[in-house]
Image (cartoon, rainbow, N blue to C red; front, side, top):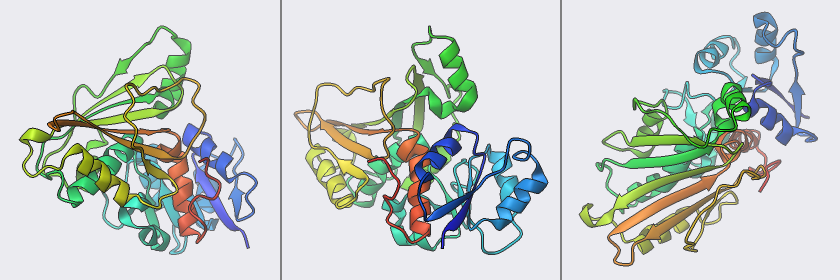
Length: 307
């Protein structure tokens, strides 16, 4: 029997892409509210309580309010906002990191942020392995396509074609930072420097490392080998051995739900650059939500994904 799914916030970018990944799948039946009812709290409450699974694609405060509208003890929730990413009682929806069995058994799952997905995927396994220190003041540089900013930023970039680069979060304290620190287990909040480029989708996340001044840090080769071992067998996350002279984000990027990781090292081993590439709407948002939904429903994690 098909499980019912209600996407609250289905008209937004993330919600639309989740619905696309679920289209034509007979394991799920979508509960859909028409335009006249999708912002009506009574209609939403009815759908939230009728669904086997709810996926929240809402601003943080609205996501918290939606959870409060669920009055039963059976509806299971995936929250794509940042409202619950470090909240008690919520499983962090990164199966490769927390364990697929954890997601499968959870009632409440918080989808990772797009930038944190890259940062955590790179750094957490290496800190766990003792190859990078937990008490280092890490820096994270990242660029993303403008779709990560929602309809307002999409409209801004598509209306003003003269924008070539948008640096933001310049006041520091970005809302992704607590998630990045908590789920890696860092003593210090990382310095996070995000930017947006004139491409609809795609993301590159980089963590530069001064290995020579880090106590007990691994060599670039050891870092690469540890990541490869950690993600061995993953159908979604891969560690690439090549060392190209450049990495490109293309404006023509097609939707994809995979995540690729690389370790670039100086010839003398004193420095390294950890680099993650992903689709901010794929493994960074909608693809991750569908992966988590599959696991919670007892299905193959890659069902419906674009790999």
